[in-house]
Structure formats: structure tokens, C-alpha cells
Amino acid sequence: MSTTTQTPRTTPQPAPPQDRRSVLRRDDRAAWAMFLPAAAGLVLFVVVPFVMAGWLSLHNVRLDAPTPPSWMGLEQYRRILLDPDFRGEFYRGLLNNVLFAAVVVPVQTALALTLATLLNRPLRGMPVFRTFFFMPVVFPMALVAVVWKVIYARGELGMLNAVIDTVSFGHLGPYDWLGDPGTALPAVIIMSIWQGAGLQMVILLAGLQGIPADLYEAASLDRAGRWLQFRHVTLPGLRNTLIFVVMVTTILAFRLFDQVYIMTQGGPQQATTTVMYQAVTTAFDANNVGRASAITVLFFIIVLAVTLVQRRVLREDREVS
Image (cartoon, rainbow, N blue to C red):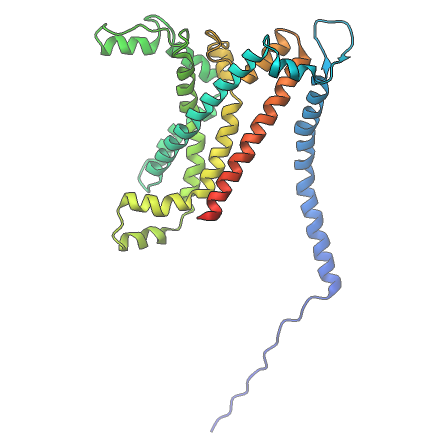
């Protein structure tokens, strides 16, 4: 009869309080080391310019005047919002911004989601297609706007008019896409959707790859088709990613400037003028820095309010579900 000796189990002893405090201090130093550069950049490039814009909006500051800035108070805001000589242009630009965002945000998000779903497959050559659809995002907006201005060029010299003329055997066109008030803004919208969908596609593709494959296998065992899997597995799994994409796209849509400045210069008949375009032209063409700063502050408040409302609505929807 043999006997076995069991070694007693040793429970890990907690670290001394002095060691825990040293670890916490080291973690605090690491956290502050990562936080301070971001906070400095936020203060330097966001807070300080906004405070300067707020100060300039309360003064009469002109680039072509040798006199120092004079105090005006809220007069610039009153003129922009209430004066018949100035409010029409501001509200027209704000309306164009709203129309642009109302079309670009849902259409671009839906297109990006479609591309991400199609490209989220383990097939040969798929990275090439992903790179191909992402390439327009890499190009500078100025270059993209110039290329699309050539595509939209009026007459038979424009690439789009040449294609329409060939397909219709000369029965349609040519059209002045950027010179017609009815087609100028839609032309800018189409170009913007084409250029920005790749960025959303990459973000949504990363979200798709984060959804567990077990959920799709369970849905397949329940005899759920692709549409039901997309509706009950993909969309719920992409909820947070879609919220982020929609909010970022909304902010970028309201910040519309480059396309308008290069392709239409705000025309024709203010059909494509935006609030950002008004602020830039007011500052550097009309030399009225004070009014341009007031436009910028008002626009910042409007975009901030839209973003907060959008975030609140999306958060409530997420909490209810």
C-alpha cells in the first residue's frame, strides 16, 4: 500500500501597497503622456482659432483698411440673420448645405455599405478591388474637382457629353452641367459621393470583419437567407460603426467648399454657393474679416447643434433596441 504526498497549494500573495502605488503612478504618467499631446493639439488648432474668430466677429476688421479694428458687438450677426441685404445670401448657402447633406449622407452611406458587403469575401484578388474603390479618397480634392470639371465640360469637348452623344447617336445633348442652375448642385453631389464612398467603405469593411462568424453560421442553421442574415446579423453588428460613419459624413458634407470653389465658384445664380464658400469669399474677396468670422461662428454653432441632435437620436434608438 503506497502513500502519495500532496504538495500544499500556495495562493498568490497580493502585492504590497507600496508596489501598487508605484504601478498606479507609472500608469498615470503613461496616460498623461498620451493625453497631453492630443489636448495641446485640440487647444491649439480648435479652441484658439474659435476664440479668435469669436473676437473678430465682434469687430469691424477689414483687410483693405489701414484703421485698427472697431467694436461692433452683435451687429455682424444681426446683419447676417436679419438684414435683407445680407440674409438672403446666407440662408441660400445654408439651404444648399442642407440639400447637399440630405442627399450625400444617405446615398454615400448606402453605397459604401453595399461595396463593403460585396468586398467582404475571401476571394482571390479582393485586395485589388478594395484598393481600386479606395483610390479616389487618396487623391486631393482639388485634383478630383479639376478632373470632374473636365468630365462635366460643356459642349462636345466634355467627356460626359461625348458619351451621351455617342450613346444617343447625336439626339441628346450637349448639356452645360455646371452652368445650369438645375444641374450644377447635382453634378457636385455625384462627384462628392464618388470621391468619398471609399473612406466609408473601409470603415464599414472593418466593422463587418469584426462581426463573429458564429452568428452567420447560426443564422444559416435556422435557414435564414442572405437578406435575413443582413437584416438581423449584419445591420445590428454594424450599428455603432454606422452611427460613426453617418456623423462623420454629416460633418464633412456641411464643410463643403473645395468642390464648389474649383468647379462652379458658387454659381450659377448661387445654385451651389455654401456657407463655407461665403465665409472665404467674404474674407478674401470682400476683405471683410469681421463678417466672415461671424459667418464661421454661426455655421459652427449650426453644425454642432445638428451633430448633437443626430447623436441624441441615434443614441436613443440604440438604447431602445
